[in-house]
Amino acid sequence: MDTSHTPPERIALVTGAGSGIGRACALALLQDGWTVWLVGRRAAALQASIEHAAAQAPALRARAHPYVADVGDPEAVQALFDAVRARHGRLDLLFNNAGVFTLTATPDATTLEHWHQAVQTNLHGAFYCLRAAFGLMRTQSPRGGRIINNGSISAHTPRPGSIAYTATKHAITGLTKAAALDGRAFDIAVGQIDIGNVASDMTAAMAAGVLQADGSIRPEARMGMDAVVQTFMAMVRLPLQANVLFTTVMATQMPFVGRG
Figure 1 (cartoon, helix red, strand yellow):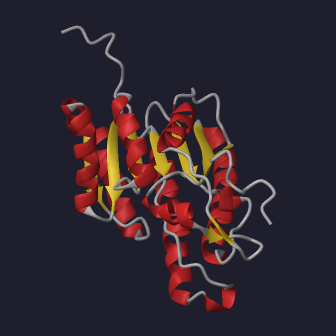
Figure 2 (figure 1 turned 60 degrees about the horizontal axis):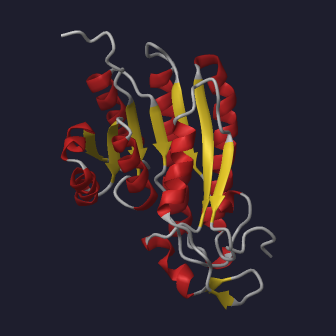
């Protein structure tokens, strides 16, 4: 069989792929021809993501690889990336998406448990995955790849009572900038997508009303998940010679610009 015109297999890894943004972007990658490792803490949720893909096209199941891991566990993350290297020998895309919200609270009412939970998943987990991806991408042949960190509009402007979440998302911006600089020498493009008010289970309360900077409770506009997926895939499809360092996609009528 002549394989001279067969396109190379493209390998992607998506954390937090069991629901929401992670699931939607993993499915978009599968539909675009990628082989995708769907990573999350719950096997049933990952399998549900794969069933969503298979319902659209049964053939997608063959390129979907569920993997149960907690990104906040450095040993589990290293085992994950070792498994990707052993199976494929390379990684072309990491979507550093896994993250957690914590309960709305003033700094003095934020428990240490919630603080450490946010830092462990949102920051440590993102760094562990970026670190492992960097080590693989800089040594594979051909070398290089793309890393997209999921930030937040909270990486720019906080909501009331969100000190743990906001601090970790500001830290993701620093992670993105530093890694983008360090990645130049190894053909690794690192960018960040900051998302505001996408319709999902995690933002359902926004439709009913959430705390505003002036102390009032008001509903907020949300956008469809497809807007996030289109923005994400635009970043993915760029050649490695080009990089979207930061992009913000948000519900047009949400109270973000001028918040406070």
